[in-house]
Image (cartoon, rainbow, N blue to C red):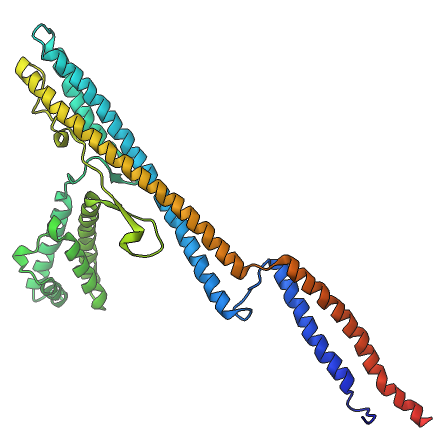
Length: 368
């Protein structure tokens, strides 16, 4: 090979090797400082996508586990209330048994306590709530205020639609027509609350530039419909998301039985102010005790199911975390070995570059 001054190929080769070594040292520093093998998509495109998928599932499962824990708290609240109502029924049974005996005196006093206990059952059933949801008084909500407000909005819309001089006549008429109901039948009911809410929201989003007055009517009507629809959904059952997908297998619906005095058959229609009524009350209370025990059994079954769900989610989180770690995390011992090797190569490269750069200086001996 000839001797050249302008192009030092040996130095260029050494330099290229040093650039590669420096890049490996920089990557090792980044991995060792972060503890991650994959810090960006360029490190491992497929692994990066899989690890991110695992991370999303782990986060979702942690929230699902929290949902199941909240369900446990709700179930414990209901269980405690059912237990207190059971204790009240036991006391009512004692009073009825005493009143059913012919020698018993002071029936009016005993009947007053009996009535007070009936009222206490209703109070507990109506006041047992979790997150604003009534647990023991299911399906007895009064929607009259929402229906009246909805009807008032419809009446005002009809008035606007009928007034040809009103600038919002067209929008009001279009809304009434969109609802596909004769104006006389446009009154909210519990049965069509959900449909009305969806229809109104769809009309609002699909009709840009609506007058603000009409928009306010729509928002108000949607609010009334949603209130009823949500309450009806709660009455039918409370859905807990305990998985990562929107499927029935990842959801648990918890239903609570109504435990008011009326629902249990021990309302004010029964009493112990006489021998016959006390005897009838005993039978009614026996039936109520059977019901309340069944309710508590159902809650207990839900609690066990939720605990199994929480345990399963914990196991899944652990396994998914292990899988993500295998893909994303760096093997520290292996990376430190590579880092040490590359540091030595880096130092050796610097020394060899110095030697390569000194090579052309040998040509000067030819000029002497």
